[in-house]
Image (cartoon, rainbow, N blue to C red):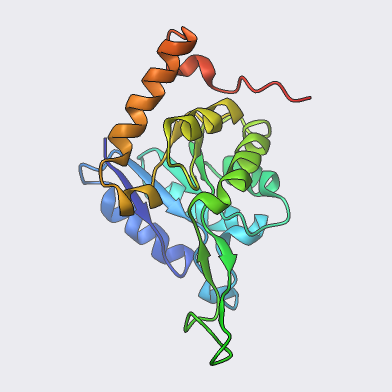
Length: 209
């Protein structure tokens, strides 16, 4: 299955890209709403319900393919954004994207990145991903795809227990190109060890205190 991640600087641009993909062999479109909306002074689409709903509605009208919306964690309420994109026509949501971070070179007193701030990813954000996936899965009726620091089968199982129907692997591939293969094997080992018939049987099974 091919999932194409798209982005744009205006709702119209996002819709145009989605429309061009509609006649291709891509199976699903993932719309990244963490990108800045130049029409709104550079604020990310995913930081307000109104902007998120606007861009998702535009893309929904432009494509017949299943639409996944990738949510930004840099918000006050992830569940409100998730509900907004669900109402605008999203078939699923994926989260989390990177958290905003910053590092400073103490010798030059300048930020390490020329943009001053940048996206923080990897293992450090995993607990935030688990929390937001859990909150979102309990707030919407559409499937949730979990991501953010997944490096092992146990990480993937944890996200699925929080409510994710599927899991994406990103940073781990930079150091281990075969990480997805290893993670699938580790998931199967866990299922065998716990005598769980199928991976779907762990989805949403966390028991909060």
